[in-house]
Length: 232
Image 1 (cartoon, rainbow, N blue to C red):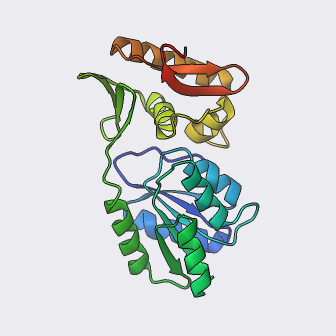
Image 2: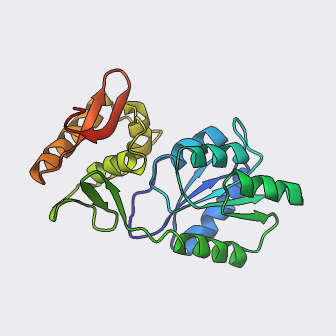
């Protein structure tokens, strides 16, 4: 599945292994002007959530490969503050406590009323409130797709923006070329390493143009992360 890229609308990640329910959730959200990506297992859900491209995640608990509690806990350990709504059939008090303790912002049981689901998502996304990401001396404007350093701004192409968004969402984390391809071009894409290398080169030129000391550091055999010129 290819990630959605329309920044005008809220981006919602649905992690649900029941195809019929996943389809119904996507239909409800799309009918209310959200952009939606759906994945069906915990490992894929974690990888998508780590991309930094979403405004909220709707997360099931009982998932193949990695359960929802584990996904939420791993995101919080990494410092990822993505709003998480757990939507699950597990409605015991102990399950709710475990989910909230793992890092979920809200917990909702199935079956659910669509109007309540939408209200809870609106509540969670109102609390995010951030329209920029910052690291060192650069700021990424998430609405304008612009990169800024000390008042000097430059607009990024969509692919440049998506790569920079991934890097800035978790600047201490190394992003491999494979992960960038899956998160920016999509899991089913035919993009290759040279596509990533080309856009990283474009971004480096734009960072130089705005006079940033921030740079994209290459870690041979591993991938890329943000650093300073001293690291490069």
